[in-house]
Amino acid sequence: GNSVTQMEGPVTLSEEAFLTINCTYTATGYPSLFWYVQYPGEGLQLLLKATKADDKGSNKGFEATYRKETTSFHLEKGSVQVSDSAVYFCALRRGDYKLSFGAGTTVTVRA
Amino acid sequence: GAVVSQHPSRVICKSGTSVKIECRSLDFQATTMFWYRQFPKQSLMLMATSNEGSKATYEQGVEKDKFLINHASLTLSTLTVTSAHPEDSSFYICSARRGTFQETQYFGPGTRLLVL
Image 1: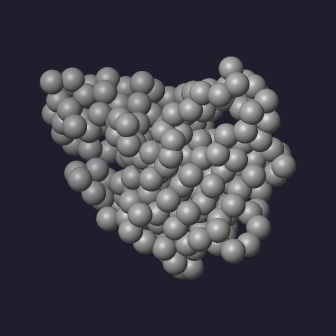
Image 2: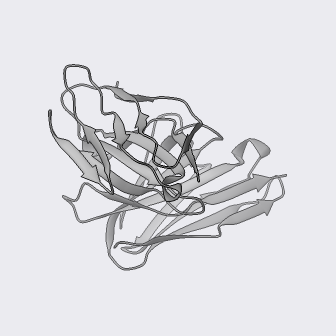
Image 3: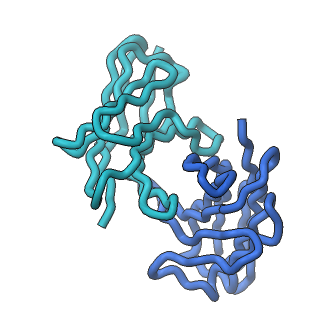
């Protein structure tokens, strides 16, 4: 079946550090892939997405590339800020617009 | 942007009682809403898909008589946890999708349910 495996947290970084969160998936076909972010006290928000192989999604300095050969969609940001502290979820879109989520990775950025 | 609200944000109830959670799309019409459950430090688990004006479709293993879903209008879906027990304590999250061919889901902030 379709599933997502995400690196476990928590991750603690200093400001301006490089962030990477690994995400791999198992799926039939080529599903759309997403990263969602949940800031404290708020609902999940779409951060970026990619719909086909080699697509790169980007937003707010974050990037992720859809790698078919490694079935991965790793999230990266070159220089994090305190405001990036949140929980990050990798997800794939199953049939009929349903989403399968990874377990979430808590990221804390310290000033 | 698209805003989805949930009410209440937190509820504590006694075992055996029923609890209703509302999910509203505030600035768009949602043809489809989804209900998720999240356990501590675990992923969101899809419980059911709710389409306006029709019966909800439940994921395998989710008791439809336990978790009643009503999607009476294009802006409101409700989840009722009937005869709640401590094992139903969890974080319940809804999301809404605007339009038949829209891929993006907009999420509510979640409802924390504690059953004593």
